[in-house]
Image 1 (tube, one colour):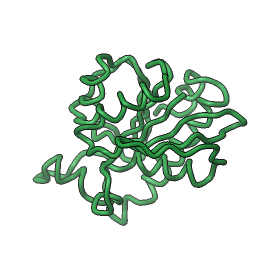
Image 2 (image 1 turned 90 degrees about the vertical axis):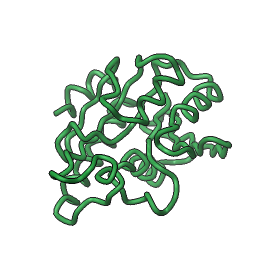
Image 3 (image 1 turned 60 degrees about the vertical axis):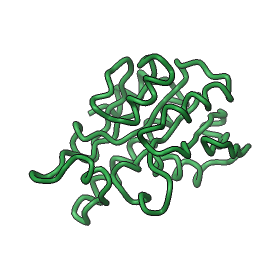
Image 4 (image 1 turned 180 degrees about the horizontal axis):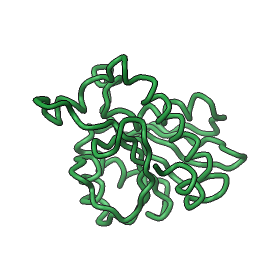
Length: 185
């Protein structure tokens, strides 16, 4: 299995809404046993242990809108089937802190997901969508996803990120259907 967290590289974007996928990968990396490290041109990856099982986690080095280039490169490098691909990303159409695990869905306007579908030629992969909520009236979607969470939102997003990590652990331990039944809301 390969879990890819989407985000934008660089300190400027570290705390933005768009980088929740990176936050999940960073957290998993911190709390898991790292078996191997992969530093490639288009991505950084780690083979880690979860529930005594080896999985690959990674972060593209490309900007969000070009995520598909890195994802395709990773699938080829690790010789993975699309069925084993899990993409973790922010979603404005989901309430802040809520989680949805889906497969075979359209990109919903998410440029990173659009890039992945265009580069690998299918939407037949799992997505762990983390809700960041809608932008306030008068705020453009681009400005919104590139802004940090407000102090009043931090507890909700923290809970959402924790749920996403638990869902990933459940996917690895059991299966994706069980994770969906426990964590989709």
